[in-house]
Length: 178
Image (cartoon, rainbow, N blue to C red):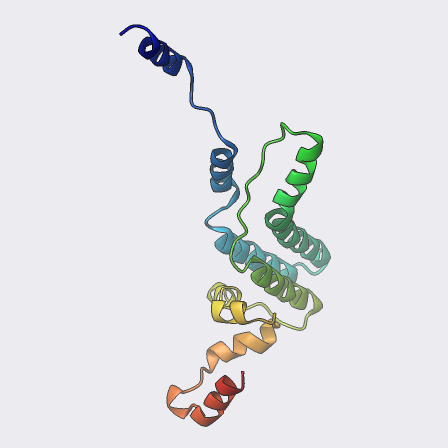
């Protein structure tokens, strides 16, 4: 091949595909969004609550550690992209973190905070890991809101209502009333 066809072939061989900003964002989003964030939050906050309960003299240190962890994770996922976009106006070569906001992170973070704060205050004694995991990941409550104290929600797991004894009239009135 000669002429224009040969030049196109040669230039295609020399050019390498460049990473577009969209591709860079996708790559970093995989790195910056842990799949196991809820599980990590459950584990860390459970351990912090147990340490608060058993560490009489250093319980405030454990509380601060839990607060820093929870608020740090929430701050990263909520504000990393915002901060990076502002910094890129000063330093354009700064890479975008491409952080994806996990579903329900604010709700379960604030519920975890209420749990460890109530444990530190002595108003609620920590429960088993499985009970705490249900409390923190109870998504029907998370999407409906508001954030509740563990003393209000966890006891309801022990005594679930009998579905045969549901007041259907009141339920329909609540649904129709909005």
